[in-house]
Length: 296
Image 1 (tube, one colour):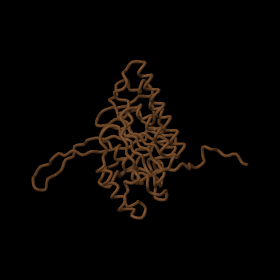
Image 2 (cartoon, helix red, strand yellow):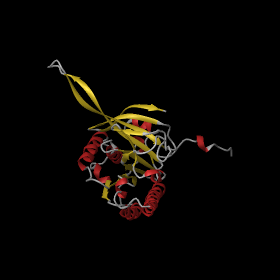
Image 3 (tube, helix red, strand yellow):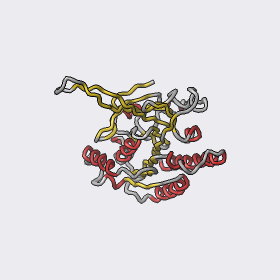
Image 4 (tube, one colour):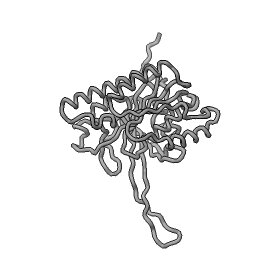
């Protein structure tokens, strides 16, 4: 048998399409299974919108960019956005009437979790739930929105508490990776950002990923939970938003009014299977849609 270079073999890992060729191109075809993908960004950057879109699309067969499976959506902060999920489900049901069931929400399971210790117990229950196979479609997507909220108020800044927090990081992420590999699911987490305070060389002098620094809403930021958590995920994608003032000429008056316009961008920070890439995107009634992509 002729030796083969594993580095140049085609990747056979199933991927969940976002449903937009531009964004899928930026992400190498979509969100990979057997892996943890983190979406990091400030509030209103589009993290939850992407997660909801993936949740609905997971039901589609692989031939149409889905995984032919159901989804588990764990929310940790605010009330779950059922109205927006229903809006997206109605759109995809109308677009794929023969591929999505009469009730698209039937294959989406939602659960609230409020702290890291509860999450550990819930993940054990999820493994048993997935192993029994009671769902109409096998579970193929797990979403946690957001991971940072689980560690918000439980731990102080003392060395002992920081050590306990890091241990909990690895316990939660280890369980998620085990589920991803055992059942071939895609795991998507959202994470918050905090204002960056420090040198220009990165966090503690360490640059992590493709970008020298992260900016959103005219602020320099860094992902919440620090370097210890960064080593717990396989891929990190940064979603930013920027408000721009745009002059609008009025046809009824000889004057120009100033309005605000939001520009959003998706950047690949690090991923073992992806080249550096970024894409501008917009959020519409039908979902998240890419506008343009830049590689390198």
